[in-house]
Amino acid sequence: MNYKIDAQSWKSGMKEFREKTAMFYSGELSKNEYKGFSGRYGSYAQKDGKSSMLRLRMTAGVVTKEKLAFIAASIRKYNVNKVHFTTCETIQLHNLHQEELCKIMENALDVGIVTMGGGGDFPRNVMCSPLSGIDKDEYFDVMPYAKEAAEYLMNFIDAEKMPRKLKVCFSNSPSNVPHATYRDLGFVATSEGKFDVYSAGGLGNNPKFGVKVAEGIEPDMILYYIKAMWLTFCAYGDYENRAKARTRYIQEKLGGAEEYKKAYLEKLEQVFASREELKISISTPVLSKTSDGSTVSDRRVIEQKQSGLYTVIWHPIGGMPSVESLCSLSDTIADMDAVEIRLSSDETAYIVNLTGAEAKKVLEVTKETANTLFETSVSCIGSSICQVGVRDSQALLNACVKAVREANVADGALPQIHISGCPSSCGTHQTGKIGFRGGMKKVDGVVCEAFVLYVNGCHLQGQERMGREVGTILTEKIPEFLVRLGKMVETTGLDFNAWFDKNEDEFDMLANKYTA
Image: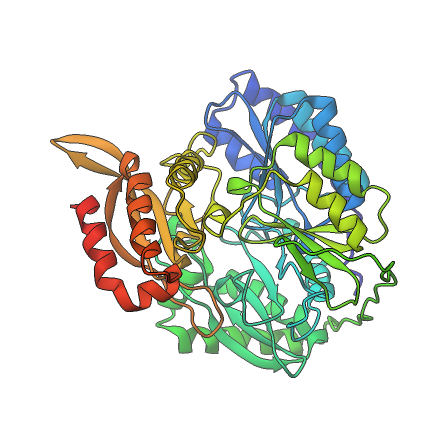
């Protein structure tokens, strides 16, 4: 079966997108009407209704030098002023107006960047462990399989309509960076060089961890399992109630995890019985680049399993790099052999395959970065831009970082926190050690801006748990709460995780002063 799609074929739909976008900006289409159409193209109107965002799919989180150069050129040509690294390993451009939106979307296809299916009821960007292929501790390199899956899934954008989004990801180790055990479909590497398969998981309202539907499958069989996921969607997905149109609700609909697994495996048998040829053949990629003898040592540098090569870690606060830094990075790596960017689910960018000398240059142009564990905290784009956002998660994170810096809280005394502007959990607040979700609170009869506090979530494979809901804190009080918490932990000399394990009651006592 030839399931490869030429990115240029997507240009045929641009005429209709241009027409509908013109209608929206002229007032002929409402924001909601336009949203139902534009999501297919990876674009939405922003909250103000006067500008748009564009989601650039980066398969497996990989941003090649060529793709980054295109983004940098677009930033400069169209004066783009806001960029976001998302928790689904994509890059979003913001504050775009009609003409530049259409031009960037169309021209992106020339460098292999497809925006189709970036929103709406379609397969989303396939995610992958960002250090796959270079991580010393991985079971095996899952990146080639993630890329193959992404190619195959593009065929389903024009298939029978599926309930809401379909998120597929690949994990190379128990660190479970892309959250493979609780996505719609996750392929989890094993020490035997095979995959365990998890299905029907997801965060947000009614969160669920995935059901393990298969163990120890051969990597070349992954497309059969993806096809079975689609058939399960078609058979059991809720097409009437959009609030429940996600795979995690199928678990409940069928009576639990075991019944879901049975239903999924029945569809898998149908796929095998159809005799459709979906087995893939992948040659393990070999990196030809070798060390030039230069070395580097820095807290933001990782030694790769390829001797003499390095990765630089870059985490702009909130996943919001300045456009100047992003363009400078593109210029810096333009002539470096085999260098690329890998995006992570926590909004970190990893610049990989660097010699020591190259790593030093990259460190210099990425100095605008988180300096502590707490500063690597995760935030969705927030209500200032997102149509469905309830609270401004980015503003909260910036206020918290400022307060913690001013208080000089020791590194490690606070964990990486996760902030979502609404219940959708784009900031993955439910599996963060500390999480916040946008909400509201009545004070003396007046509704005030607030966030719901969660604690003790975990994303690690085999240790997954949803955070416990503690209570609701006024937005303006959260920075103070975190500073007091950090100082409390700091006095013990422990890091936050070690402290919390012994002092959960003390955490609750402090939190209760702010949630009461």
